[in-house]
Length: 449
Image (cartoon, rainbow, N blue to C red; front, side, top):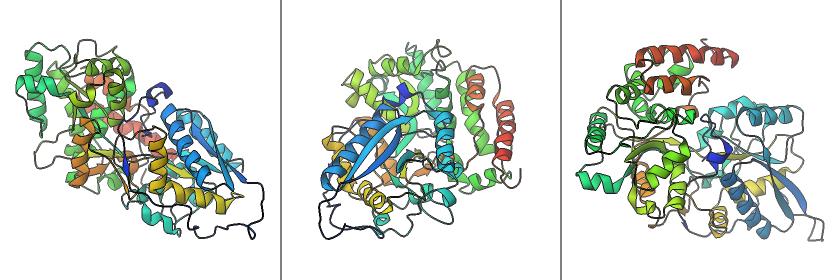
């Protein structure tokens, strides 16, 4: 998964989601999407060459190359080549915007779903695929993340993932702890682990400041569960973190951990990679993180597949227990592509179980549910992934705020480091962050700002 707003470094993105797939087969080459063409009576011609632009994150490149290879084998009249040269973060965003605006965009490109897509002006610059029948293969929950009121523009190229807390199953069993379903239970568990002599009862890794955001961002399910329209109000400047009690709780939870002294002693300097190693080798008891990190832990210590569990950021009531979800990125094309028929054939393939099979056959595993119908996960995925799936099965999920609102202030990670370090209290932090988002909202030209 590509986390649109966390902007992980490329080295971090290479350590992503593990598992395997059992797939139902389906032929993607037997029918053509609307607007496509099969050639001129079977005469031998040179294949049409298409370029798929991706970033440099290793897993993303592996997925793209596996899917392209599977497509090329099934469609010898088209050759898709992966160009893994797009920079990470805002540099890549700006480069893509420039290429689209100047007519220099590649045939297709890998990009975020959700609110960041709106900055590409999709209605004027991207190929509208709303009338393509292959979209019926894509789960309905994904479609809004690649759509505007006027069209749909992308097909999912990876899996969905959750935000929550990894925990050590052996430590929980040793201390007789139950998986918490309320925040108070979670704090009590953490205190019990610390009292038992574990220095890493709850790991934070502010040496990589982006990791400070996990608890706050992954708490969004609890806001959504109380007020499903909060994101719209937030975007319209009608609701804010500081004046919405359930939203303020996302900051207060960080303060709770600081006030109780529950973090590892080296939280200020510990890095993401070091935190994962502590969890993997059994030193760490709990670590707030996105699901993609399970792959690194299993690589470091294979026993992590059975020893690491996962649960969502708890709310204040056990009846409001659910998971915040990051939707997968997508494949898009510029509106003025010279090879529309061939691009649509590739998109049709991406939105099929055949593309999942190509990924699996290439040894590129998945660590969350696919949003393409017909792609399922087997029983032997890591325990952390098994723990995540019931939230999806029971419908207790909500998309992360970044898929519902374009507003995210640039200073969030630094603000949360201050809260987690005990430097700033939750109320001040929420008010500061509400001010932080104003400039961005005004730059986007949003109504109400």
